[in-house]
Structure formats: C-alpha cells, structure tokens
Length: 103
Image (cartoon, rainbow, N blue to C red; front, top):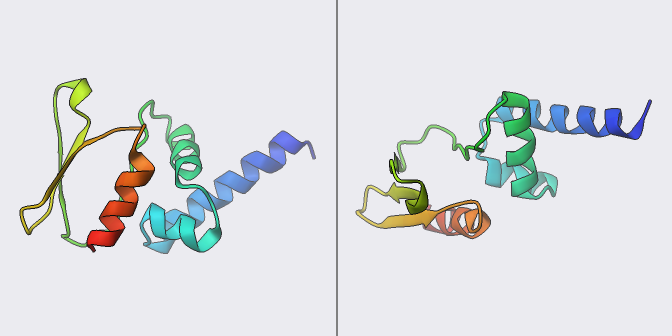
C-alpha cells in the first residue's frame, strides 16, 4: 500500500470517527492529538466543499450568523449577548480556543 493511500485512509477514518463521536471538532482533535485545521481541511476535502466549516455538537449554545460580505468573516452571538466576530481561516484556532473557554 502506498503512503498516500495510508494517509487517505488515516484521515477518512478520523473524519468518520469524529462524525460518529458527537464531539466538537476541537474536542475530538484535543483527545486524539490532531491539529484542528488538519481535520477541518480533511473533512472539507471529503465533503467536496471549497470552504471548510467548523461544526459543533448540537447544544443550543451559540447562534452562527454568516455575513454576506466575504471580508467580515464569521460572527458568533452567544446567548449571554457576547459576540465574537471576524473569525476567518487565519484565526480559526484562536477562535476555537476562545469558544471552548466560554463554554
């Protein structure tokens, strides 16, 4: 088996295991010593999407609003009224850590 096939199987297994786990991507990555951005990228490759999507387990914790303007990034509004905006691929890891801290 070629190294590229092993890599594809490795990531396919992780993406499927994460989906079945019910965990957030950040928690799954922490538990499995995987970089969050790698899982996001590999998931997006397998989903055939151009833009990766960070998802969370259904918890009713946050409302996600996506601006129609590309340069605004993602904006999250928490039930407490706290807003986290300007999330993009350049600060995604930092944003996920902030979100985990606010839980």
